[in-house]
Amino acid sequence: MVEVTFIEPDGNRRVVSASVGLTLMEVARNDGIRGIEAECGGACACSTCHVYIAGDWVDRMSERTPIEEDMLDFAHEPDPATSRLACQIPISEDLDGLIISVPQRQC
Image (spheres, rainbow, N blue to C red):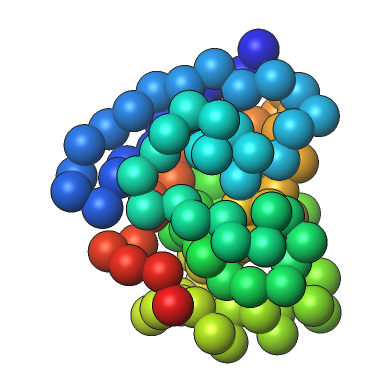
C-alpha cells in the first residue's frame, strides 16, 4: 500500500492507503475525499477530479497527456505547474508519501 495525503478544500489533511494500480481519482472517491466529484468516472472527459500536486512532487509525476492538458482548461483555477487530473495518475510505489491539495471547487 502507498500512503497519499489529501488536503481537502477546508484544509483538513487526510492520509489514506492507496492500492497500486488504482488511479488517484479512484482512491479519492473510494475514501470519500471531499471536493473530488469525478463526474465522468475516470474517462478524462471532465475536470471534476482536478488536484494540485505539492511542489516537491511535481517533477516526480508523469507528464500530462494532450487530452489531460485540454481538460485542465475547464478546471477551476488551474495552475500550469501543479494542476493534474487525478484520474490520469496511476498509483505506484514511487508515489508513496504524495501530497495533493483539492481545489476550493471543481469547474
